[in-house]
Structure formats: C-alpha cells, structure tokens
Length: 193
Image (cartoon, one colour):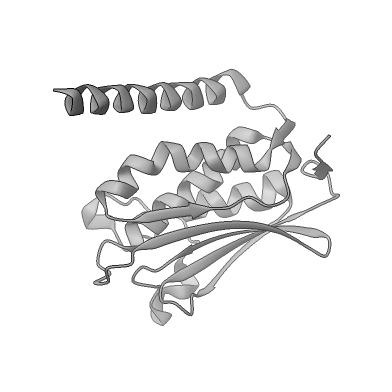
C-alpha cells in the first residue's frame, strides 16, 4: 500500500504541474510580453511528459544561458508543443530501443537557435517539400490533420520574424531548427536580470 500511496502522490504532483502550466497559458491571453524562453520549453516538456513516457521516448533539455524574449508566449508555447509532439510521433514506427528527443537552445550570431532533435523515422525525401503545407500530413489515417507544422511556420515567421527549417539527424531521425532574431521586434533577446 505504501507504493500505491507514493504513486498517488506522484500523480497528484504531476497534475498540479499540468494545471499550473495550463493556468499560466490562460492568464496570459494573446499579448506581447517578456517571457522566459527556458521556462516555456520546460512547461511544454512537462505537459507532454506522460505522452512521451507511454511512447517509450526519453526527452532531454539542458538549458544553458537563461534568456527572455518579448512576444506572444502562448504562440511560442504552441510552436514548441507542436514540434515536440511531432517528435514524439516520429518514434511511432522507429524500431530502435533508444528513442530520444533532445531540445537545445543556443545563441548564434544575431539569432537564438532552438532545435528539436528526434531519433524517429525521419522525413522521406519525396515529401520534404510539402512538410510545411497546410493540410499535408503523413498521419491523416491516424489522427493527423496537417495543420501543425503549417501553423508552426506561420507563428515563427509572422509572430517572431524568424525562420524554421529541418535536416536529417546523423543519429537517425530529424532536427527541426527555429531561428529567432535577437534584436528585432516584436520578439527580441533580453538578457536575464
């Protein structure tokens, strides 16, 4: 019974984290405010942790330099949630024991570069040009609707004046890279104070 109580307490703590994260998103609305980049990414990973565990996917994120952005935190959350969710899905047909997603953030010249790397099935060459098209999905029969990456691209470009691209991961799978300008409005790099 002690093990059952420990599991119940652990589940209760996870639920409290999920509710806290959801409440933050509701309270924010759609305005442009300063937000902690690493905190938003951590919230996304918390929300998707259970789904990743069920899929047998390990998620990793080791923030290095805390930084703040000015922009729509809810839209940034949406970008990251879509990319991480897709990375979890990419492992669905990957026959390998080391299913892993790694999220990283680094400064490069005048950009903040956020990468979501998976070790999933990868993106076949014949569909690479369609990945960001609205209503294109490789998962239409299993619940995909083809609006996730199209929405991500729109948010990155219109809300943050950034770019998104992808490439093969040398460990297998795909790496999605989001580059956001450090100094351009409405999203800009702000050192943590």
